[in-house]
Image (cartoon, rainbow, N blue to C red; front, side, top):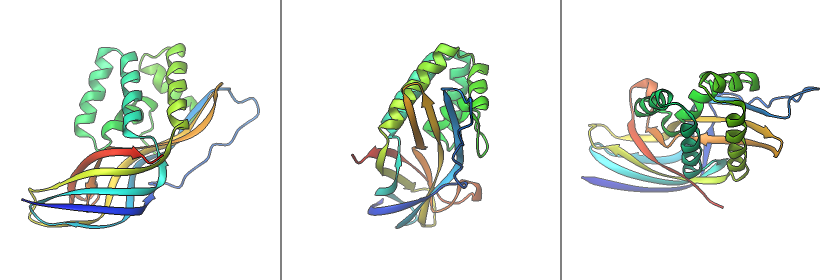
Length: 219
């Protein structure tokens, strides 16, 4: 079986929605956490082709900052450890079938199924899953520390086109969650990219080939 190696630099990213920066209001709580973007993003400028019945490996430096896959996994482990077994099972099952993959925990926990979710909505969503005020604060402080470490990243993804009789080329489509975290210890914006993607076509179109890998910090 043919295996293709693709290496690219300066790859762009299209957020699924126009980014909205939350405004600070008088009397606003010291804590705030919000989702400003949640949906399908698109890595552009890859210029690759993986032929029919072939496999490909794409390494590309992105022109955006994101939290690494390792840091997302650390946060996932912390969050799941605070949840009852029934909720952990819901997340685990969702991860198996969702293109949101490793960031499923956060779209589910924050309640950000649409374009945005406010501080009030995200906090209420976490409480509805059984988290206490103390657990939420602990989780958000850990999240803040990961967000502060966010840097430009590269992807190292494997494209599996072995079962298809057509080639795939163009962009990669993957889910993203981004927003703002604010606690007594500081404020930071964050972006998380899913570690699974669709190569050559958006998942909703039914085309393309599955892809998976890692988001790796460059500095």
